[in-house]
Every structure is written in structure tokens, then in C-alpha cells.
Amino acid sequence: MLKSAVISVGKEIVSGITQDTNSYFISSCLSRIGIYNRFVLSCDDKAQDIIDTVKFCLNKVDIVITTGGLGPTFDDITIESVATALGKGLYLDSEALKFIHDFYTKLYQEGKIETGGINEKRMKMAYLIEGCKPLKNSIGAAWGVYVKQDKKHLFCLPGIPKEMKPMFEKEVLPVLRKLSNSTMIVKNYDVPINDESVLGEAIDKVMKKYPVYIKSLPIGFESSIMSVRFTAYAQTEDEAKKRIEEAKKELVNLLNNL
Amino acid sequence: MLKSAVISVGKEIVSGITQDTNSYFISSCLSRIGIYNRFVLSCDDKAQDIIDTVKFCLNKVDIVITTGGLGPTFDDITIESVATALGKGLYLDSEALKFIHDFYTKLYQEGKIETGGINEKRMKMAYLIEGCKPLKNSIGAAWGVYVKQDKKHLFCLPGIPKEMKPMFEKEVLPVLRKLSNSTMIVKNYDVPINDESVLGEAIDKVMKKYPVYIKSLPIGFESSIMSVRFTAYAQTEDEAKKRIEEAKKELVNLLNNL
Image (cartoon, rainbow over all chains, first blue to last red; front, side):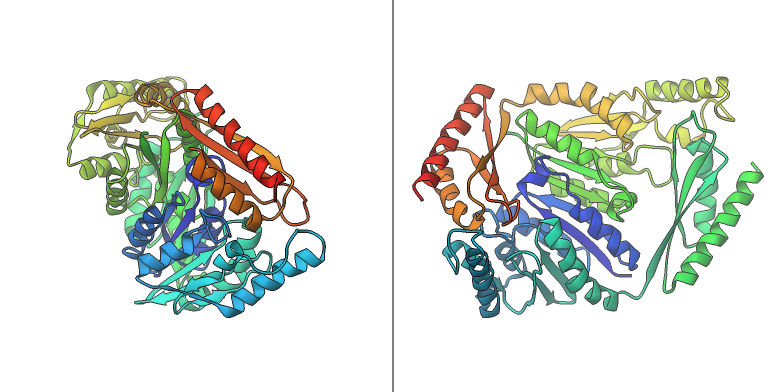
């Protein structure tokens, strides 16, 4: 099964000013298409921190997806930092440059900003990673990138959720769906027990027998029931569902015989 | 300034089933008391992943706070993994064991669970890290730990927010407040410009002159204004506020002269 990591870059995330919803969204999408997301990381907009975080992930997973730090301001340094982590350089993408030029010129013509065309800050967004596939932005000016290197797949996406989501869905998901050869099913069931320390033994037994991950979700001792989450990865949805059904039946049996 | 990292342990986080609110809460508390939170990381409940994540952080920051993985089930392995990362062993804490015994016995006496006292799963929670200060849990059965080693401060807290928050506030914040010798102030101001690529140049100039971090928060080109966030760390609140005031005045000046 393919493994992945999601990295959110930005001081606003690590300093607790903004709740990171991007990695939650991306992680759940990855799980649904059967990719095992192993890490979620956030770091400050510091070159060395981004480089170290990307390297940490490249060492451990097949797919790394970053969000944030693609814009025109001084602290938008994800692209150059990721390039450094990969040992690659940047190039000026003429298509991206034209897109940025036209993007700002249109806003200028609509009377929304003071100057159109290109300036130094805007031009910065046209520098992409050597050998990448540029990922078009349907909302904002900053394009993302997809880099394939040594069987690793690295995607850099914008941080603004309304720009990130369509880019992820249009440009990243189709690539990952082709790469992934498994699917994940999650099902929650209530069981008539409230004590995780007793239920745990039954879960251990079932998990040793079936290729299913089972997690109890305690509500508290005021309730007489508890929710139990079954997660199964398999090549087909039917196979994953079948595994969960079998494991659930076994767990219910064990609990009835307590 | 002290640096920190927050680690959330749990498959439910990395697989995108549960939104991680713990690290957002802790990061913002750390920032408010002037600690520079540099990383937020989440990993699966796998020993090697927890060990690697903790080591990554210990290499880079002074304070590491983990949440999750302290309970009675098979996948609650944070304490033993952190101990391994630190090169330490575990010991059976007799006070924690008595607390756990009494905790379950009380629930049993109240008719809320089927058996009181200790079983193997419950006993697991009484194994703490050698040389730690145990952190009491005012809600649930699992205690946390505080380990000080080589000038590094490591805290392990429960993952359930209603258990984590009181433990953080009662047991962790007072320690960190004593360690930290700075404070952080954040102020947002609206500026009459909507183009980050132009505002960026003015921000660069101000940031070179004042020890203040300034971040533009674009709303979109439909709006004629943009919010700008000023963040300053200083030894006193007054000093931090003064720095922001000066930087704001300079930015407004520059924008008026565009």
C-alpha cells in the first residue's frame, strides 16, 4: 500500500492562529482512495524547517503533499525550499508567467487593483521546480507543482483552502487514484459495553485474526455503550466490507460470551 | 526564546477521521506565553513512527508536548515509545496504580461498569517513564508525564480534549510560564489595499526595520481592503505592543506614499 505525508507550511498554523483544515481534508481524501497517510506535519515559513520536514517525509513515504507558501510575499518560500530538499533548481515557467501577467492585468482592467502586468513579487510565482509538471490554479495566481523523483511523488499546493481544494481535486486526485491499488472502508458500530479496558482484550483477539484495524471510541462511563470503528484496506470495496463484517461478527460473539 | 513542538499521536488524526484540535489549542497557548512553536506533527500509533517524530523534534526544540496514546488499549503506546526515544525505561508507579484501582472501583460501585479494581489493560496505564514527574488526570484514568532531560522538557498528555485541556492548564502551563521569559502580542489591522504583490514590498521594508513579523491576509480581489497581522515577541507586553505600533505607523506611511 502506498504511504503518504501531508505538510502544511505557515507560521499561522504552528503559532495556533489558524486551525489547519487543509491537512485534515487531504488526509481524509487520501484514506478514501486507499493511501495510508502516515504523517501530518506543519512547520514555520523557514527554509531550513521546510527542507528538514520534507526530507523527513521523503525518507518514510511515497507521496508528499505540501500546502501553503506559494504566494508573492517574502515568506512564501515553499517552492524553493522543496527544490532544495530534492536537490533541484528552479526555472522561469513562461506559461505560468503569462498566466500571472494576464491574471493581474484582468484584475487591473476590472478596476480591482492599481497596477496590472508583472512586478518582481508576482514574477516570483512563475519560478517552478525543474522537471515538474505545473499544476494550474483555477482561482488564484500561484500555480502548484508535481515532481516525480526516485519513485517519490511530491505535490506543492496553495495554502488558501478555496485554491487548494480545486487544485487537489482536479490535478492531484486523478494522479493518485491511478497510483493507488487499494481502497479503504470505515464503519462505526455501537457495542453494549462502556469499559475500554475490558473491550480492549476482545479487540486484540479479533485483530489478531482479521486484517482489520479496530478502535474503540469511549463516550464516557455515563453511557452504557461505546462506538467501535472498523477500518479495512483492500483491493476492492467489497473485499474491505467483507473483512469488516467478519471481524464485527467475531467481536459481537466474544462480547456476548464475556 | 524557547522553541517548542506539538505532536498528536493517533491513526484517527493521520487518516483524516478526526480533526486534530489539540495541537491548535496547545500551539495558541504556547504562543500567548511567548514560546515559539516551530512544529506541529501527527503520526500513527506505531512505535517507530512515534520514536522518529519525537527524535526529530528533540533535535530542534526545547519543549515537546505529545497528546494521545495513554489509554488502556493495544494501540496506546505513546509512553513506551517516548521512553525509547529518550533512552529511558518504564517503572510501575504505585500512586498511579492506586489511582487507577480506585478510579475503576468507584465506577463499579456506581454500577457503571462490570468489574472494578485492576486488570492487565488498566495496569498498563500505571507504567510511567523513569525519572518523570507524573501529571494527574482530573477526568480520566490515564496520567500524563513530564520528563526533563538534557535541558529538554517533554510532556505526554492524553488525547481526549476534555482530559488534555485541564491537564495542560493545571500541570503544564505553570511550568512553561516559569521557563518562558517572553510574551507574544498579535494585532490585526485593515489596510486600504487588496494586492498582496504590492503590499508585500512595503511589508518587506518595515520588517527590515522593526523586530515584528507582518503577514498579509488576502480576502480576495473583490474586496478593496486586506487584513494585516502584526506579531511581536518581547520580554513584556508593553514592549511587544510598542513594537507593533511603530511598525504599523511605518507601514501606513509607506502605503500613503505609494
